[in-house]
Every structure is written in structure tokens, then in C-alpha cells.
Image (cartoon, rainbow, N blue to C red):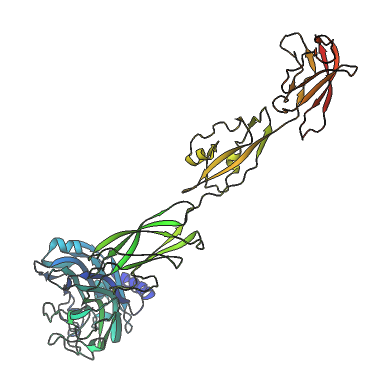
Length: 604
């Protein structure tokens, strides 16, 4: 793609997406402490574009500037801005080091529709490494201006240049607040820029600096710079009616063609207590682009912030322990001790405390508080900590920034997992309430949430709580006595729940084996009734011969009948004859009110 076509494409893109007013100048960064600022930079123009017709005065692709700080002035930050007419070149070199823009700005002229650009790069590390000396910006491509020479050069709006904003620390300085604002806003006519985030405590040595583009010395038509309605000037370098006149008030240069690096004293133009300032710029003819505004104010104030370091909670508890940290960063004065702290849950005050010590500049203090959340607060709630709040939403400490005292976090209280209630299990009494059970399928039935975890079955609640002695055989579990509770432990990410179900036995119908052979061969030697002894402990069993005469009677304490006749004999007992006999079994159990009656066959 040729350069002319590229220019057209960029122009269309910028026209589509950028306001004709460019990007508003807004706060980019703030420094609080013993700081000051300066500018260095240079133009790429060989002369003022209002004097020479055409682009003969726009020939440079590189230029130099010198940084000369004192040894006690320590560089804190350095920001490179470069700008020009055209859609933009966002890759340049500084002292032969490749620079790619981190942020870009654009502005399209209302009258001509021509685009202008500015670019930004944080070059702090490079400037700290280089220190004082010569800085050369090179490889700035201004060919787009030359392609559209008739538009830019005949309109005399062709320009290119660069500047570095340097913030430095010096121990002998008072405590200052440095605010750096940037964007790309244009004049002619009138332009208002409101600078926010100020906090004026003392206006002594207050200053304001500008990086502006395309100003011309020969054009002084209603060209004014005012702050809070007061016209600024710095004669003879910057007359009141020609604010943007290609000057550098740091070096005193009057040949900074089509750009301005100017710093004004504003101590009589701003009031103690101001939190904002109105910058008003007018130009009756010259097009001026405001790129950077820097303010320096004496502002000796703390700036309290708070954050939660850790948050400790336990299951099913509305008591919370909060470890927090109060900081005093980006400030110019210590934060006093006993600064109040309020804690809210869903906007309801639930706790109060205060700082214990005076917190120095750039310092912090750790604290801890235990709070109880009322039962009326939902389990999911917003926890808010506010430093410099006496519990009514009112602070007692004047700060640099009054709206950064709050820390909020959504809290989900830890709740134990829910579970399904399980039915009791019943098996046949195997004697003295012994029973065998299968509850292996209860592992899945107890869970209500697929994300919860079944842990195990336990014979005691204490074992379930401590998660020891889990039952291994759940499909053939023998309970030596019933009724008996079996406990279950289930867990989620934070909590566990214990539930239980009952094991019970019932007296099942006995099974009667009605064939007796009294030959001591080990098979059917007695009248055996399965499921009778030690189950129906009050049973009574009677045996009759075929003529209805009672010949034997027994109970849970008796041996099984082996054919011996013990009733109706006058001399000792006798062995029954081979044949059929009858029994009557009274179980004496509420579930079996009627006796069981049947026959049995006895043989020797």
C-alpha cells in the first residue's frame, strides 16, 4: 500500500471513530510527596509554519534536547509525548532505542477535517539509566504531512515535535501534589478544561505547565490562557495576549517552532480548599492543540485506603474474623492514629474499630476485628470496610482523595451440605435383636447436590465427626443389637454434615421343620424351629399325641423336643412311639396373636 493511500485510510478510520474535539484532557497520574516536575523537548520544524508557505520548514525527522537535573533531584517518572500533523507515526527512536506508543491520541480539525496525533510512552527506566545529557528523538515519519502538503502546509497547520515530562523527588522540597493530565483537545475559539482531583492546602509556589502544539508567535489574535477566570502571563516570554507562541519557559527559548513547553506560577490564581480548577483557552485565529497539563500544589494531607488481607469464617457461624490493612499511599502527610473504621454488611453497621498508630507517608498498618453478622442478613451478603468513617458515613480526617476509603467484597457464608432424610432399615431378628443389613445404596440416596461428597458410614456420631472407624462392609453389616443408629458424613468445599438412619429388627415368622429322627446321627435329632429361640423369648410349645393327650411342654429355657414324653407318665419319662404328633406353638407376641398349630412326624 503506498503512503498516500495509507494516509487516506488512516484519515477515514480516525474520522469514523474519533470526535472532532479529540480526547478530553483528564487525570493520568498523581504523585504526592516531595516532588516537582520539568519538561525537555524540541520541535521538528525548521521555522514557524505561519511564515513559510508550503512544507519547507518541516524537514527534520530528529531533534535534540538536554536534561540537566541537580544531583539531589532524583528521577521518579518520565513520560515521552510526540505529536504531529497527520494520522500518526507510533514507532520512533529515543537515543537509538526503539519506542512504541503505549497510548495514542487523535484530533480532527473541525474546519479542515485534517487529523492530528499524539503518542505516549512511559520511559522512566530509560531516563533513569541515561540520566543527564542529550536526548535525541528520531525516525519520526512526517511524510503524511508532505503527501497532503496542500491541506496542511498551505493551511499552515503542519507541525511535529516531542517532549518529556519528568517528575523528580528532592528532599528539600515541601510536600507537593503533582497531577499529570493528558489528552488532545483543540482550539480555536474557546476551550474549557476542568482539572479535577486537586486538593489545595497552600497555594505558595503553585504552578501549572502545558505541552501544546501548533502555536505561532506571529498570531496573537485573542490568544489567552486563564485559570479560574484569571489571565496567565509570563512576560516577556509569554504575553497575556499570546500564550501559545513557540516558547520554552524552562530554557527561555523563543524558537520552539509550533510547540510550547510553558510553566506558569498560579499561586494567586487558585484558592486554599479548591478541589478543581477551570482552565480556559481562547484563540481568535491560531489552531492550538493541548496535549498535557501538569499542576504542582502544596498539599499536605493523608490518603487512607483499606483492604481485606484475609477473611476467616467457620461453618454454620455468623461470627467472622477479618484481617485488614490500612494504607496511607499517594499522600503528603501521615494518617493520624484513632482514624475510625466502620464495617457494614449489606449497608448495616456491624462493627467499628480504629487505627492504632500514626501511619506515615507510604506506610500501612495491619489490624484484626471479629464481627457478628445479624441473623437478618442473608447468607450471601456484601461486606464493606470503610476507613475514616465514624459509623454514620462521616469522616473526621481531611484527605487528598475522599472517595477511595471503601473496600467491598461479596461474602458467601459457609453452610453445611443439605441431605435427604433416609428411611429406617428393618431386618429379621436373628436372636437377641441381632440383624444383618444392606445399606450400601444409601451412599447415593443421601446426597441432594452432585457437588457434595459422601465420606462414610459410622457406628457413632463421634466417629463421624472425627472421620474415623468408617464401616467397611455396608452390604452385609451385622448389628449385634437393635435398634441402632448409623451415622453418615457428607462434605462440601468447606463444611460437613452428619445425618443418621435407624436399624431395627422384627420377629419374622418362624420356620418349622416337622420331621424328627431320634437316632443321634446329627440330622433332625430334635424338633427344630428356625427363628424361634432367643427371638420369641416368651414362646410356649406343646406337643400332643394322636389322641390329643399332652406329652411335652417347653419354652425358651427348654431343650428342643427329642421324642421324650415328660407329661402323663407315672414312672420316669418314656420315648414316644413312631408316628404322627401335633404341636401348638404360642409365640406370645403382639404381632402373632394366634397360636401356630401343625403336625410333626417322629421316628426312631
